[in-house]
Length: 154
Image 1 (cartoon, rainbow, N blue to C red):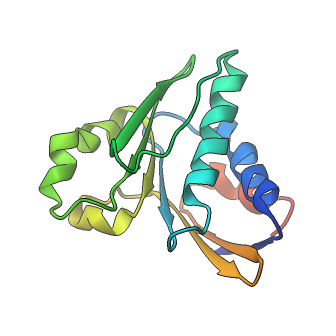
Image 2 (cartoon, rainbow, N blue to C red):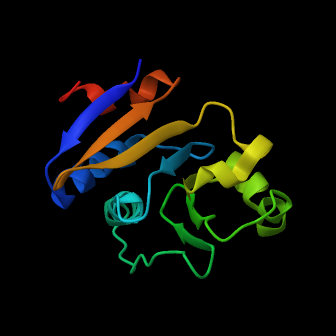
């Protein structure tokens, strides 16, 4: 069942990511969909910083727009943050090593439509859209661990 949340501001978007972060484990994939400026990178940044903070770590979390992939490591897992906007062929996903990361790391993927048939089964799909000055977040998932997304707002 999809979850729909109205997020009045950027802090609300980050709060959803922070609530989700501790429940992720290697092999989990989050697909972040939305047009430019809807908060995909903001969501990913908040989630990654929460995971790092929970491990007593801090690191700047830039957008991977130009690097395509940024990797991080907390005390329990590797985290891959990818922005696939500039990719033109799904084979580039394999060249980046994302296909292997889907099995061994927590992956956050912006512009997941570029994955085509390489989209991991069971991924958490999050769509962010502008709604006036606010945003709406729509999430769909299969894993019962992720039902906490709707626990307070669903």
